Length: 165
Image (tube, rainbow, N blue to C red; front, side, top):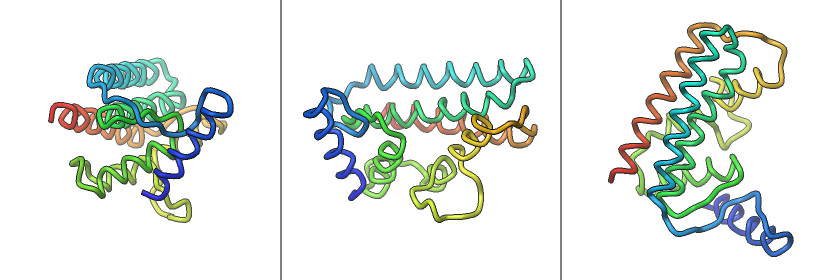
């Protein structure tokens, strides 16, 4: 919750300073907008599959990540938050899980992004996206691609369940 408060304060300061923010603000919950984020997530997932078919799986690392990320934005919207910062979005989701406000497996969220940068082990989807977006590799291995797509499908399904509660 400490990081969430920092994100809220950061956004308020930025809004006062220049009328826009790169943090987290409280808004009126909007289930319609939350569902629009899910539609965008599904759109990104279709693009992911299209890119793979066209032998551009390296680019699909970004689209699959954003498919997942738009689901997190949908959940934030349902609970009355607008986020314009990935770290703030992740912190908010961790907080919603810890507070028991959403039934979302923390291990899934940790596979997407870890708040502890020192944590080693399995790469997160954030790390994979960065590796393929900024690196020189031209394709994802099929098993990694399938793992990411399956994760995105799982997150989309879980997000729809959360929005329907």
